[in-house]
Amino acid sequence: MSDDTITTSIAENIGTLSINRPKALNALNSATLEKLSSRFADLETNDDVHVIVITGAGDRAFVAGGDIADLASRGGLEHYLEFAELIHEVFRQIEVCKKPTISAVNGWALGGGVELILATDIRVAVEDAALGLPEITLGLFPGAGGSQRLLRQISPCQAKELMFTGDRISAREALRIGLVNKVVSREELMPEVMKTAQKIASHSPLVLQLLKRNLTHGQDMPLAAALAHEQAMIGLVLDTADAHEGCSAFLEKRPAEFRGK
Ligand code: CAA
Image 1: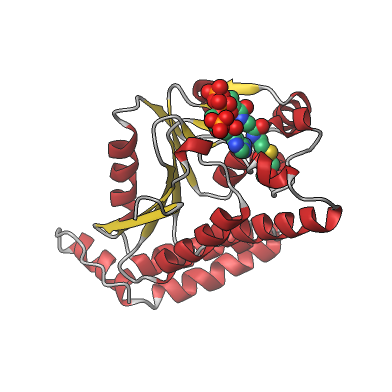
Image 2: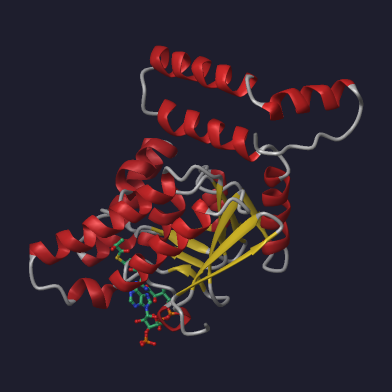
């Protein structure tokens, strides 16, 4: 339905979720966040989906942030805590999703828009996209997980400058500081994202899930514990039919046929 604030589609093992409020530059209000959560869960639990792509509807914005009207409509701290609780839950749901995720950044990614991409695994941006954390200019700070994720994902001094100034940066600058993986022209965006998604989806979905789990949990552990966790996970992987298929296919000089088992 075109008036749906979240639309999804599935093709070739890739689930695409689009935030669809183009008149509000895809800003995230509570209702949209709730729908985002349930539609994202549908894709995550669908066995036909191996990779999830998140993008914004229209050609202006990925997500221009939390919906400022929604935020301003809340009278007290209690209400804000409700919104904060929800957006935290949804972004964490995306971050720990068992399948690889890709942000297709098709325009403005501001505030909650950057906080959303920080919860995804891979990010491709159009060259005329602008990214930033303008919360400080609204008397806020990035409180949807963004302050902590940014600090851990890029250089701390770059992260602090972005948050303290509220400056917007170009997609190329975002690439330079390691906030996005790739910058492409508008025409190339979805082909490039799909090319990457297809490459990932061609691998064993089971092994991808174990790899993602290993990365998600390992990154917050001390190194010795993370290495022990990794060793346990690769032990599981070596016991899968897909690992045997991949190695046999190499030795037999044929393409592997992974079955997710
Ligand atoms: N929330 C609600 N509505 C928004 C919005 C947002 N974050 N961003 C844009 N819109 C709405 C505008 O109000 C406008 O609506 P109307 O047509 O009804 O007036 C419409 O989208 C188009 O926006 P503009 O007319 O402003 O478009 P522009 O091209 O002149 O400017 C822009 C584009 C620079 C992105 C500008 O819209 C802007 O600065 N938006 C706010 C960005 C921002 O501050 N984001 C952080 C929000 S706080 C947050 O994210 C914290 C959180 O909760 C996670």
